[in-house]
Image (tube, rainbow, N blue to C red):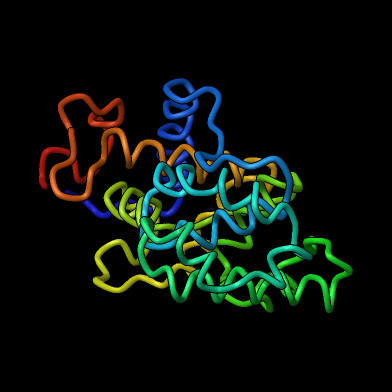
Length: 221
């Protein structure tokens, strides 16, 4: 296969994204939430588990602890008992209690609306911060999770597609440079949903993939 120029790759990226927009016209966050605090906590809980599992425990969690004030003073063992089924419950309970305390102490109980402040909270990295910025506040945010890493790699949307240990921050920087900021949140959602439905980790469903005529990795995995 001849080497693809940067301009040709950019053109292909936009063509493939247009297809994903047709296939997934109304993407949305898979986590259930009713305010920025709930989304922040739910996203922290979603690490190394599924959104579906998180959605099973958050109704009870938010019924017991409806805001940062309540969760900041919670008994860790009680929080652990509620979220036990999602795994890593000791660390996750510590983080959501800690971030709630930090919100009360440093941000008047409000979820901040910028990357630096969000990532200063316990258990909050760039991916979580981008989820909150994009979905709770409508600000440009491009969460890079395992699905985004896998799909952008197989599509060769990024220069380090062959790397065995790609840097999520570098992926975020390279991919967002190719799309307008107002598309970043939905772009991430569509890549994630495509990864879940079609471009599976172990055996991608290339036969039924709407991108199989342009994807450089089609039928190769």
